[in-house]
Length: 540
Image (cartoon, rainbow, N blue to C red; front, side, top):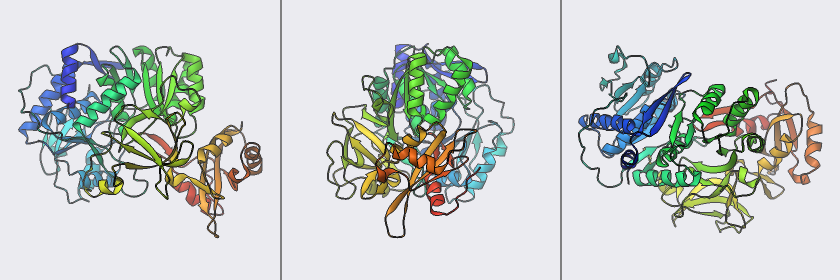
């Protein structure tokens, strides 16, 4: 089934149900299922008239507006696929997307948050060999009128699509044959230029329904969509909400106080995010004491070691149940998650169980490739309809990413539990090899964070001159505190095996971070470079 068919079925079931709440400052503008479908159909007719068809790419450079969802459903109606571009992307990142995806059309946000997206696009276009795309200028809900669309032309024409609160019925379009690609995402690019993994219509629709069942979504629920829908976590969250008949509470700009306020007023029931985002929501809730008692489920990625703190506070304050999740651009977000009856604290960590029966997993030894037994660490591999179908602009990448027997190599270190779950440990590149043992850095990081003077901690491994490895810890202290490295190493030695105690600990002012579509992460590669230097930057 296609995404546009999924939306049509929702309208048939209840056309007046609210599908999206567009947040506009202090107000929320409701978009019914019927309106979302009508806007998508009108846009699809425009795309069809402009020659868009199966196999064509549409780049959507919009914030979290209901318009972004319309573009996804309209693309589905004509058989095209969408590549989202985050509004934070710089010129090089945009140029890379143009090179690989070769979009025929770009939906560009007009007058959003003071961002000069068109200048970025012109500069990016000058660095590629891709043909100039046509531009569709989107003002968004409540946006300023586009009075001079011609200034946006980059060589292939400009138009202003009719996707804002229309009620007209678009003409029927011819059926889309086969099962075309529907959406592509950008990977982190931590080991080179970002890849653009793409997924087919049937896979996107089936995964959305599986996630909706796993989250227990139904009509009347309100799902917070604060992560950019251009990224895999934001996209899968929004699609799951719609598939389950819930409402997307969608934020174009993240401001913790505003999000908490709207969550309280709208009765938000579900949230998906990284611990970097969630700790800001918790701090706001602690300060302002809003009514968030409707919030019953949280799916959280533990990027910075704050998951347990967040989960325990929300459970005690609102009764919110937290589960760790697992996913990526190649296998969809929310591919694995822990069920509510899973015991804590394991339920709060990354990993879980597949959300659908046809999603399979295994863990293999990274050297011998022999399947690991429960309790042994190895590379997590997945197989199923959720696995990437193609890489835009790089046809050979898929073959290189999949084993001869069809398993996708995630590059993540994990272990299978005795009862058939998966515990995510870390990226394979982050694993520590200490005295012959594979050690998960998070184990040491969690011990450091337990110290009352430590706000955040990250541990990396570096190679010694003799080829052996040592662990180096970086610690951000609580404001006003100044723990010594010797004190922190002694703290670790009280509970950790001696080979796990960091050979060196450096106290720094702040972590080097990068903010992407799925949250803010510590840049481990930068810390590894610092660890190689006798006197690393402290930022203090």
